[in-house]
Image: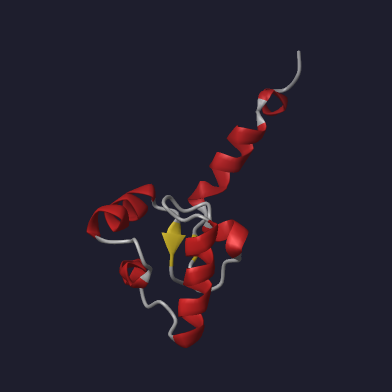
Amino acid sequence: MPPASAARTPDDVQTSPAQACVDINTANVEALQEIIHIGPQRAVQIIELRKAQPFRSVDDLVRVKGIAAKRLADIKRQGVACVK
C-alpha cells in the first residue's frame, strides 16, 4: 500500500501551500493569480500600481480596477493575499 502522501493529487499539493500568503508587493504575475478575482490583467495592474506606491494593506487592492468592496471581501475571506 502506498503512503498516504503518494495518494495526493496535484490539486491537493497546490491548495495546501495556501496557508502561506501571497505578498501583493513582491509576488510575480503567476503567484498573484492564486488570489481570487486576480487574473493575468489584474496581476499586471497590481505590479504596475505597486511600482508607483506599494500597497500598505490588502485593503489597498481597491486601487485595482474592478476590485470594490464585494471582491475585496472575497479576497480577504480567501486569506491568501497579504502585505509583509
